[in-house]
Image 1 (tube, rainbow, N blue to C red):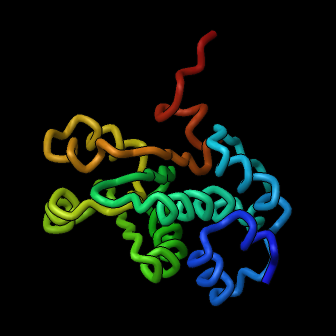
Image 2 (cartoon, rainbow, N blue to C red):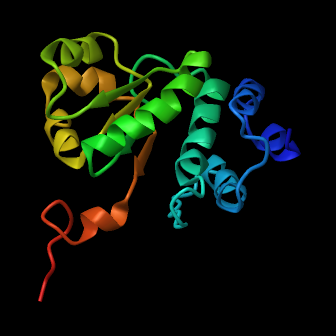
Amino acid sequence: MSDFWRRYLHPRLADVIEEFGYLEPTPVQERAIPRVLNGANVLITAPTGSGKTEAAMFPIISEILSEGLTGGVTAIYITPARALNRDVNVRLREIASRLGVTTAVRHGDTPESERRRQVREPPTILITTPETLQVILVMRSMRRALRNVRWVVVDELHELMNDERGAPNYP
């Protein structure tokens, strides 16, 4: 096991990620994780498959564990596509659930029964799309669930910047 994981991450998280085969951090993880843990706003750019999701989410999960954060959504992970939502959830859910951290996906096709459950029992980490986030931010029923949000991760930011989802292109 890498000393890096033990130096920076909650011991329970370090144990679990080792079980999942994360023996050494990638270069992007080595650079980003300390900065995220220090509370910096971080822009992570690296090639596909370099561990950007983990570079953002491992320190967040570590802080959730260290601070015992419960009782609502503490992190929102925004992806531009529902397929990416599912991929991120599958990757994070297994690790997070072993630590008592819940994850859930919310998008336009989320069944009503799941939406009601998310209001009653909000996940610790909510994975969503920009359009769905826009809807839930104004929902009275989600206000209690969202009052403790501390982290927002925007994945594939470049996909959102120059289309109708992002800032308009001004002449």
